[in-house]
Amino acid sequence: MPSVPLTYVIGTIGMLAILGIVTLISTETGLSIGSQSAVSNLQDAAQYTATELNTIATTAMASPGETVMFHVSMPKSINSNGYGVNLTKTSSGWEVVAFLISTPSVKATALLNFQAAATSSNLGVCVYSLPGNPAGCTTPPSTVNPVQTLYSGALNEVVWASGNSSGVTVGIGELIN
Image (tube, rainbow, N blue to C red):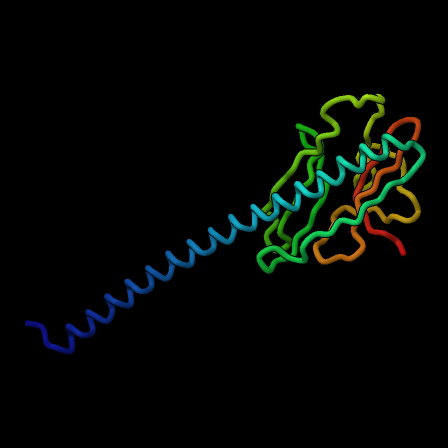
């Protein structure tokens, strides 16, 4: 028959093991819920930016020779994490990608819709992207510094579009004061 102190030791070790398992499961569940929440919020940020780019491209098509800029107001953080938004060319077209800076694998995308069909005025839309402007788009106006990524918390973030006789160039950037 085991001694009384030995049963207390065995019981205590068993309870600590159960507590450890419950803690690990709770932590994993909390991280999973946090990640799902972040992806949902990133999807909102990507969709917001894509909508603004689509709207500004349509506006610039209606007024060739003009440059249109719109201040993008995004939350400073998502789940207490900074995030970035950039434009990426994929096999299905141009996408706005929003991602957490601390965990770039946590991301969401939104497709830019203006490229799907020709416009009524048959103007083409060129997406100005960095590095190097590989599409050869028209350069942005001097009041905009084109950037590869818009970062949360920045104050002068804009989407911009310039229209001319050959089409419309859209992009993301920072307003130069």
